[in-house]
Length: 306
Image (cartoon, rainbow, N blue to C red; front, side, top):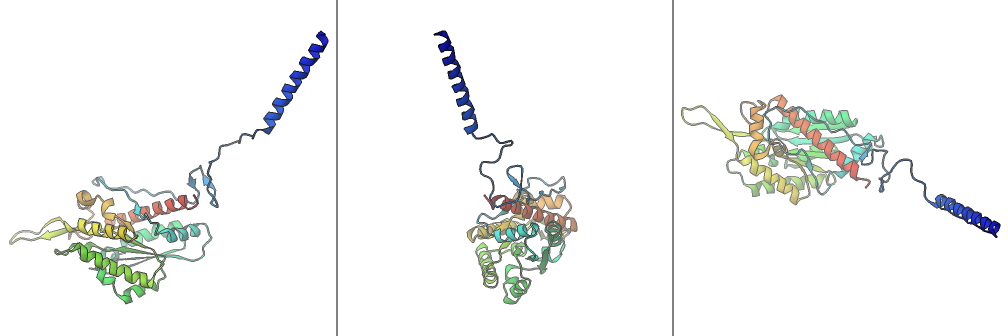
């Protein structure tokens, strides 16, 4: 009887061991390394889990110590109006686009001086390769200066993939500045651009800030912050929001109504007229625009395949 019980016990132990082995084989094997639960689809190899390999290192620049209370350097493009431009840049970096990507930067004397747009353009070319960055500035230009078919046709002949519009300083120096009239002028210019270049994204920028001069009898000329710059900036920002146009707030980046003009002036980056800038001032503006463009591009390539 004892022999039967021992044999029965050994059989039960063998059956239990066999069941345990089969259970372990049926279970999914643990991966050798963890992977994201929702990996990107049709994308390049990931660096880590959340950064794509075609994102760029965001450039940083040494600022004068006097720059205080600066704003965030980001493009405002909530409706993704710049996505066609970002996609062309992405394909260019992936060697999947053999066409040159073209940017045309239109504006007033800040653009006419070349340093601001060319700083941005040279950095873009060094980063993306086959990219053309052309500036078309006119001294003293208003929105109405470019609201002419021949001038927009000149832009169209360059076959741009992006148009950057940097206007507003001269509007702000009109002592009878009217925000409603400025909005109408912006709308007229944008309508003309849409008629000739319906599929080309546009990036508006705000003016950097300026002073206006006052000269009293037998006294030296004095300068104070132009109070209409902030109104002009708000007009541009509201127009962009209402019409789904991308915008870069240079005025806000530099310190806005409280600090923009003070930052530029205390850093010694403005010319004696307190409206235009020394070369280092324009170079800094160009570097900031490049930084904002890189951040916008990175957001696009990180989100495009989610």
